[in-house]
Image (cartoon, rainbow, N blue to C red; front, side, top):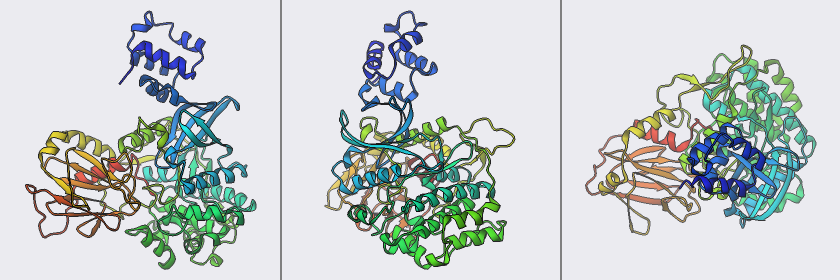
Amino acid sequence: MTVAASEFLDAIQRSRVVRPDALSSALESFTDVDSADPELLARHLVEHKVLTRYQARELLQGRYRRLQLEHFIIRDILGVGGMGTVFRAFDPKRNEDVALKVLSERFKHDAGMRARFRLEARAGLRLNHPHIVRTYELGVTDDVFGEVDYTTMEAFPGIALHELVGIVGKLPVGIACDIACQAANALEFVHQQGLVHRDVKPDNVLIDNSGTAKVIDFGLALIDEAARDEEFSLAMIFGHDCLGTPDYIPPEQANDSLSADARSDVYGLGSTLYVALTGKRPFVGASPREIIAAHKTQPVPNPKDRVPDLPDELASVVQRMMAKSPYDRFGSMVEVQEALQPFAGRQPLKFDFEKLTRIRMQTAIKTGRLSMRRMSTVARLSSAARLSASTTRSTDAERKTQAPTKSVNAPSASASPNSWTPQRRESASSEAEELLSQLSISDAQAAASGAMLRLPDGSLFHLAKASLVIGRGHGADLVLSDARLSSRHCRLFFDGKLWQVVDLDSKNGLAVNGERVVDAPLYQGDRITLGDDVTLRMDWSHGPRRRNHRRLWTVIGLVAMAVAGAVFWVLR
């Protein structure tokens, strides 16, 4: 509920995010501030750059305590998801904005998650390089958030490579190779410091408007033999019994995470470059285990099979980087840079970072990953496969039928003649919002359908909402206590005639009547299996029954998946 104007102003003063003189100066044009519309006041203060949009929204709800952590003044959210929250915050000690990463409070007693968080910060503190996002400090605070682990990093205004590819598809060769060269330069420095990244992937490469790329996320870094205890804690996070992200994991690391060396990062960078050049993942599978098995056993893919006009020499470089045996790969990142440099070409990249962060936050709110009541318990800039439901899932054409595409402008600034402005491929998310808003199905209509789910214990759950989420997280509408489920595993929604189920990029997948699906309509008696063996049954006595033909993929199903998944086509 929005507070009154006087309460809004009181919240601003209590928050201490604005100097009193700056506030007074900005409000001079209001004759009767106390009786003014608080939302107009907020808009005015945002326009005068006294408050950020995020601060104004929090203060309008009276949540002034959430705008400070220790001495940091929180200004915006940069990333949200399942592991923590990354804020843009002002650090008065440094007199500059920093990226403040806060571990979710629900993990404060989780040894594995805390180990990963500490490991990332400890590795980052050792690395000072122009193509690595700097880490400034690691701390623990006992504040209004409770005991909270946090780390501060350089506030780098970059778009993640997976976001960029998700918007535009495959990148121009020069840009893709230049990004890879910069990442290789960073990773060579990492290796010289005695570290191995072990999670090189598009999610962990950021690019700013100038075309500068920086590597992030050392949460799985192999530091030294003393890390074996933390290695065990990290292993507890992963359901596929190895450390890394299935889509990009080198075969030797999948067998033994402690055996990873610099050549393992060469493989990860090769897989990342494959995605940048083709817009597709190198291997696909119905589960993380299948994808990992493909990395171990299937032939190295030739990117020319997807992009025939790629230079033969470049395709050979990518394939050598992804060789099954470390001995057949480039021996160092220096060699990788030398091989890629002839194809690389730096270009400025025009996009609006502020708009990008707003889209990220709006996406998180829509998908339920950002709870406005529990800001401190959400977030994500993680690369561990079981930490993020979207890590091992792709939304490319290999996983589902795409809606017709057309090019539209991505979130961008005005382009200059010598810069490259990403042109967004329609991901169906805009169509999704339009179609779902046209449906206008109420909870009452959904409840009137009479549909229920029979749970594993035999009890019945009435589908009384037009859209609901099933998972093991407390924010789900139907909470199932099974560690193999994702916090937000799948969504059910009613389109006025049928109930639909949509996989929310869960870590262990979804099946209907034994067949793996991403989205599907539901009929009386259908079996919905979450993960491997959590089975629900559709109990809809007055509903339609499934005919004996192949499952019909529906446009509405695709639309719902796009809305539930992300604003972008995310390759994770």
